[in-house]
Length: 132
Image (cartoon, rainbow, N blue to C red; front, side):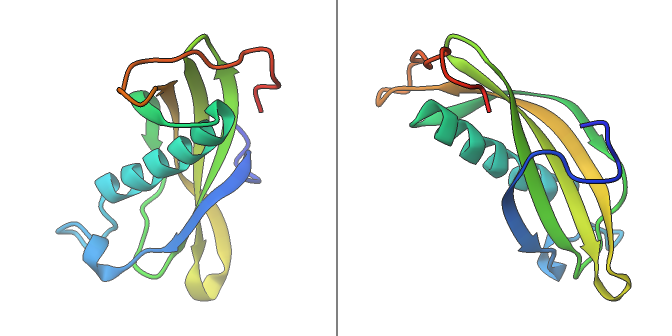
């Protein structure tokens, strides 16, 4: 997640930032970005766990640059760790800036997801597989 030249991981989600997602200053609300990141991390972890997952922690959340209305937001995910029941996913968020076509990192974080069964209880993840 340290390379600012190119996104890290696989594209998990892409969406346009809309006026309904702005804060009082006219920038895209950070909570909206976090929600996208949670969905992207959940998608990557769901695939790795082969089933339901839940978010248990978010760390190293950093808003690097503001997001503006009209930017095309892309969330990239990389599974960086698999424990007995948990999956750690780095999420890298980039914005494509409209007419300028500049593509730059705007947010990054690390999510820890836990695999859960039908009752919502933690369940084992097969750690013998490739973590990515």
